[in-house]
Image 1: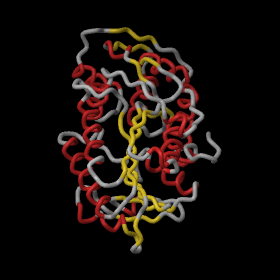
Image 2: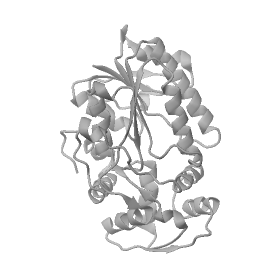
Image 3: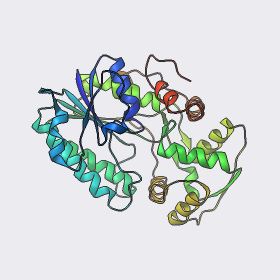
Length: 316
């Protein structure tokens, strides 16, 4: 099958591309700067910008041949002011190009969480992108995930930074919010698996790891992997704004990313619908093992992180 991957240079995309190749798919990677992308062997690279719709048609018709499916892995978690409008425009341009090209399926990785009015701004934007992608003619498959554990994940890197630096944390009540993190290896397995499962077309699925944890437990268990203990002191009056400033003070996180992450922590993000496990069986990675692999990958370098996410390739 010929498959287009947008966001091929991102945290998930750079792992997904070689995984698809390993499964025998013909992959086209859409990137803004081809010179800055070290494509795996046999991957066709096309330059384009989702904010410039005129640059997109060549990605959907390489050498005159169309693509059967397209992955949409683009979002601006740390994009700063106006990121929701940029994501909205990118999604519209993408789905219009995919519809014009006659693509059969689009696969989107979105955010886990109940549909309700008090969603964080970031999660509301992810939902809006889902709705836009669903307006096109391709059948849309959406996978919704919470924190993805892996080297290079924006959310996990913040957790790792906190766990590594602080033996004691003064935190707001959000540390008791429930979350169901998932290893990046498992995300890749699900993304590849739904492509070969036509019954997943035109449907939305929730994916998560085997452990449901509070953020306090996530922080403690991550620090334990580093050989240390963590003490958490709760401070109920710590506002989202102050929490974001605190994150920026004790980590290297971008200010807009800090705000987005903190706002999202008020929402419980656990899997309520696990139908996909019957359709795409994945041996889910326990949280502690996922963290250990992420830490090993950080120390070994990016190549190890990517290899560890490819089904059938030895993992660190």
